[in-house]
Amino acid sequence: MIEVLGFRQQELLRMLLKNKGGMTIDQLSQALKITRTAVRQHLSALEKDDLVHLGISRASGGRPEQLYILSPKGRELFPRHYSWIAELVLESIKQETGAERHRERLKGIGTAIGTNLRKQHPELTNPTQIITKLSEHMEQLGYDATRVEESLESRIPSVEIIPSTEIPPLIEASNCVFHNLAIKDPDICEFDRALLSAFTNSDVDHQTCMATGDNVCRFKFIPKSSTPVSE
Image (spheres, rainbow, N blue to C red):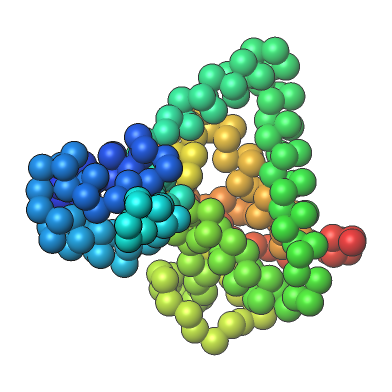
């Protein structure tokens, strides 16, 4: 979120958001009413964080002027109300199809995505490797996910230990990307469970859920007796 940045850096990013073609140091200095040196310092920090990129050089009748543009990562700092739109779409589907078909549709979408992701890794055959790869995909999607192992006596969170073939591995997610939606509509979790099940060809035991007040979403993977996902 853009609020984590200082006031001047927020202003600078907003100027670049409004000027998609980019701005020079002189233009930013005039717009923000700060010195060129200060602008350079802010740009250097923002470039290091991959929030600003160098744009094209613009001819100015003399020495070419360097333009600075907002990076894709920088654009993501600005609020976009995806969850509000998603909530409206899902509620509309639920009203049209009914609760049961709504759940089945969410499961179908999750299954399709999980199957497609799994096909990208035909080299993985070991269950532990598969679940580790799944946790990496979840991490990339924003779930803040970690594969963990469970002992017979207690759970050890966020720690990698020697895999066991007798005790099913788990994934813990500290961030639910559908949190607000899932609180209002618990059926949203069908999507997660179906995706995880399809990717691992496992039955998924959703042991804890942030939408119901738990600290993490915790998934245990129990091997199926059926054949693996086909290509």
